[in-house]
Length: 512
Ligand code: KIV
Ligand code: ZN
Image (cartoon, rainbow, N blue to C red; front, top):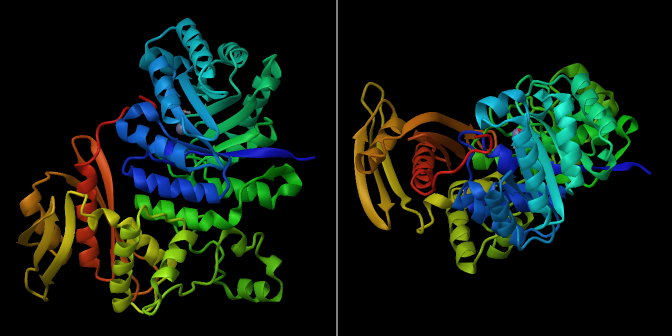
């Protein structure tokens, strides 16, 4: 019988570490629900000890998601591990993932610890974690650049202390597939108790080889868990992409001979949800989930595919969730149809009042836009933060004037803690004028590090989805807004970013 390959998704932890990809608790829960629908085996929900916000997100996900194992990252110390265990209390299956750096560079320069101190701390942390949960993963951070003898000593010791999964990170994306595969193989051959743990790969994409390295770790090294993120989200060049690794193993079953639990039909929805939530746009030629991944533009290819699909297609588009763009709802759709569609899209609203509010926004949109696609509905709920009166800033209305040869003017009405304020300004363009009109009141002093507009469903009739990334005092946040009017979408995105900027505490970095 073929072995099972465990898919460990770390979009909500390592993916979220990417500057600007930070998510609110509710956004994380929505993505966790989609990951559960996708049937990933393990969801790394966050790093509970890093901030109160992360603790609450891990706790909420642990209390809600029942089919996947829920994991929290934790540095190798008792406080972090206790905090992780506390956050995971409500989980059906809980995992603590503890880590400490083992490369000479990280031990000396970052931790300022001797190898013996690191060895002791790793052992003691795994022992402590095993007293709290059954399922303990250990990662030697920067493992791939660690000394082989030292790494063998540490990993043998933590397995003896009860670590159930050993994950070998290529933290800086330095590995080459064959070398990384052999590295895992050597570890497994040299460590006498290696068969007592499941081996896992965790590759970063700095040289564009995260997926190739992970697959080599599986094929050559015998790893049976892959750590990955939706769309390859992650710091710098990102992590191993879930959709690519999963589809490689599924499409080339003849080569890998491994079973997967993932229901690949939910991949595209997960990709869109992560992209819409974080504002990290998926490049059109991205494998599996890019807009062109299954589009055959050249005449020769089109002809071939029409005659026999497998002339140019190695995967079926529908197996990863592509369907012909269908109009899901319209002006005449009722509340029940809307509610059901939300459920199908994995959006769970907490109360009937919330559904009613979302439904009335849907009706407003349907009045202005005859065809409503899934993407429109997702955008509508992801801009919750600027229409939700619990938030500090809320969008009310906007008018702007622009004419060739004239300097554009904008006037905006928005709420600050429930009270309406009006701001006006001119600017280089209507968007610039509108955002300056907000700043007249807010005076956030934030620097805008990214502004991008994307047509949600392709044409000029579609909604414009705007992402605004703001940076202030070392914090980077993303705001997303959608509207058929891109100036309004921009104002919503800006207010949403301000809500995040003013709403979350500091956090400890995982690799800090
Ligand atoms: O890349 C890395 O080393 C990590 C660890 C914390 C597992 O993300
Ligand atoms: Zn990582």
